[in-house]
Image 1: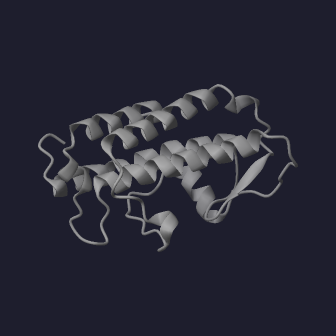
Image 2: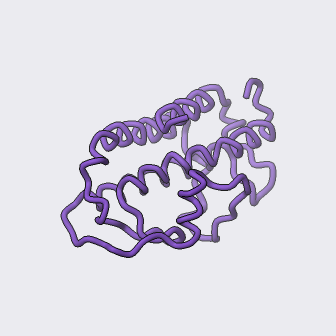
Image 3: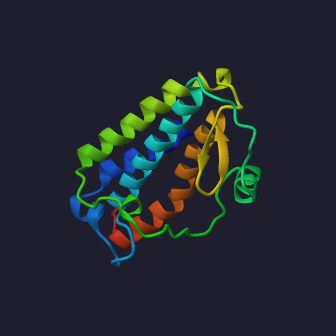
Length: 169
């Protein structure tokens, strides 16, 4: 499933959720559907900012990915395990965004995805931006990371829908 289809999957789910389902947290440390969607929007927009930095004129970077980054790209996605992000405001998404705000965010991600998709092949692959865990990534890798990240959260989406009691997940 490509990024555009994944965004449509998340949008279709969001349109079905009641506000109570969207904000339901089964435990204090468990995200709601709204928090997961807010996280996806913020992370995707950040990844596209990194694509833009790679596309800008700058020095070439000869350093590569970390071992974890190499494994991730060899697998073509995140392993099927839950990942606990470090505590901090950047990893604590909002649980008060409206459905409309989240839909606008997902639409913005889709627009950026479509805008960059055709431009990626022309971006110098030696222009890279460092990812904290995966090392130096070029524009194509940041773009692919976005798809991997969106796919990774599909399992969480299904689990959160069940916990929130969504009628037709």
